[in-house]
Image (cartoon, rainbow, N blue to C red):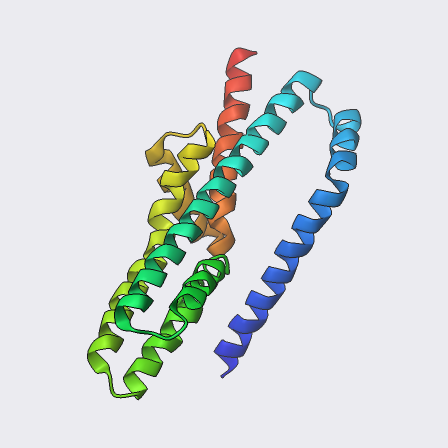
Length: 196
């Protein structure tokens, strides 16, 4: 019980920090950028390039996350419809939305559906839901780097995969975003140093 409570508190606090940080950057981002340009000991041209690399990474990951979650919603909806689950379209959309949650993700929706199928004496459908549910959850790790390329993220595919999984290993669920960001900014800094 202590482990579950600790994980729940960590998930809630992490989500609050994520959404509060996103809100703060959206509202105060331009002012923070002007302050950084005026006070950081980095040449303005270099700072602009780092800012462009940051925006490129954010755009690529945002497109990657959006397309990945849409794919998860479509696959989940098809599986729910095939299994005859009531309100399959709503559950599919919820599965895609919940895939954004770092801990649990899409399983927050499909796991109770599988449990409900098992409890209503439909074990074959429950096993099918478990198998396809696991695949839906794994889509996040496989498709996100692929779709991020559509956002013009300037990282080789292999390096993007490594940075996503390395970020997950180093920082947990939020590492899926932090890993590629750190790698892309490091590449830009090394490029600037080489040009100097």
